[in-house]
Image 1 (tube, rainbow, N blue to C red):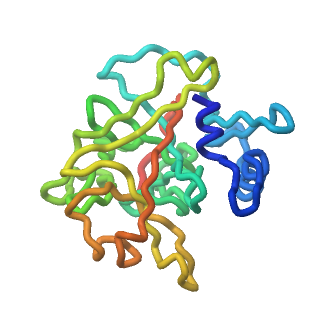
Image 2 (cartoon, rainbow, N blue to C red; image 1 turned 180 degrees about the vertical axis):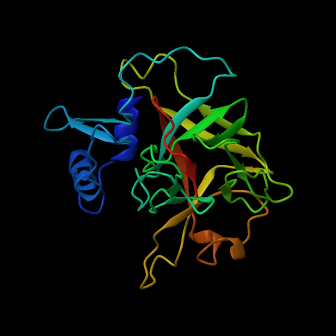
Length: 256
């Protein structure tokens, strides 16, 4: 699985003839990530040789074997986008403003003194449903609006647009890891007549503002150009959500 991810994520570049290792080094330099005792690092790239890298999604708290789970046991995880040779590749998926974004920071709030770090987005999924991993009573559900917008409820409310879908999410991680490596999996949605995640730029790619950030949608038939932030659904990029399990205390009191 890890070998597949390396090959898929970092193919040779035809225009430059750059090797996969060169491309990996470029991305590593562009998106430096570090691990501290108080941070959850989604991406860890470790040099194994001059031409080989180990790419993993590595939760800080994943220091003990993962306990077996049933369908009723929530899977808690962080996620990054996978779309080779694109601006969103290997970028984290974050909650902000009741929507999910690639290129925006996680937005949280905490009313008490002893608060979670609140600087990362952690999901929870079980029995076809999904939510954010929070402390706030009542939780925060994840849903897909009729126009495909991947969304979440505000704290202390279950309100969502009529016709939204809440029970057709799938999150899986192989129980035996990936050939002995850190277990990686996928998060997906199928419903409302469509499936597959889209990352839609806030502006036209060639605009002076640039494309960032990208808002996450599901590719449903009801989504039109007016729903896309740039004004055109054709600007959106399909991607896969790659996940790794998160273990530890709730990542945030609530997401805003």
